[in-house]
Amino acid sequence: MSNQASKGSILFSSTGFSEQEWVSRIKALAPDREIYTQPHPSVEYAFLWKHPHGQLKELPNLKILFSLGAGVDHILSDKDIPDLPIVRAISNDLTARMSEFVIWQVLDHHRRGAFYRKNQLEKTWTDAGYQPAAHQIKVGILGLGELGRDAALKLSNIGFEVSGWSQSQKQIENVVCFAGQENLPGFLNQLDILVCLLPHTPQTENILDQKLFAHLKASGPLGAPYLINAGRGALQNEDDILQALKTGALSGASLDVFQTEPLAVDSPLWEQENITITPHIAADSDPDALLIKIIDQIENYEAGKNLVDLVDLNRGY
Ligand code: NDP
Ligand code: OXD
Image (cartoon, rainbow, N blue to C red):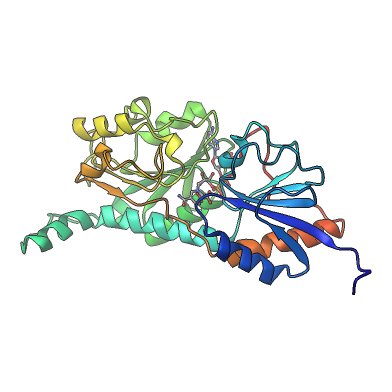
């Protein structure tokens, strides 16, 4: 039908995602829309993951920026983004995958995975001593948003004693909720395992540093506290983490994100026995789970409905 008004076209722009795979999925879900992989004046919607900065500044028909990730620091760090609504990725698929990652790392530390893997390599039949039960272990989550809340509830269901920290006060069943800068030390000083699921903003940048580690307690049933960061690399001071491992302020760390990604081959983090490194895979989502929601949002928007999952530009997340 050639007289039908054409539907708003889409720009897909990413670094690190397979363009071929994503574009073919977008085409399958939105067969009636043009898809571009380079800026084009007709583009109305931009699907973004680490796009080349400056690329969006002269697109006269652009209406909405969609982040293909939960985090939007990759968009907000572009000084040339147009003043348009930004919608971020929130999906049950992504949330469930992040909780899987957090539970994996918490349980691996709790049940002394590294110790037993090393013993197996050396064919050594030795136990690690008394194994505390989950209810004896205090896990704290920095960030009680979409991801932190789900991880907190699931860890609590396993039996861990769970607390969390956020900007605004939360109420979550069986989770002790702390809020605000003034309550950060009280949150930190009771923990055995610290999980970070904060977004990267000017306020949270470098938050995992020596000053924060100084608030952690010296020892608990598993020894010194253990750090898990799946938020962003910019939240962590890697020199301070190495120093904290040296002094014993931290017993180990699971890091999924890094100041510079990919992590440089000469980074001393690779050499640390008590660090588990994963290459930013904590919650790699099913593209369809994200795209179905985005295309639905576009259809709703074109039908006059309000957008959901909008980024609050004042808060920066
Ligand atoms: P949300 O925006 O839903 O939650 C963010 C949480 O952090 C909120 O509870 C918020 O508090 C809290 N927060 C933000 N700033 C501060 C601050 N200054 N002080 C105290 N608390 C603060 O984000 P999501 O849970 O969806 O995602 C979190 C982050 O996880 C993403 O931004 C991204 O960086 C990372 N991520 C990493 C992935 C990976 O594979 N490694 C995958 C997906 C996401 P409040 O609720 O009061 O606003
Ligand atoms: C995200 C990520 O922000 O994968 O979704 O890091």
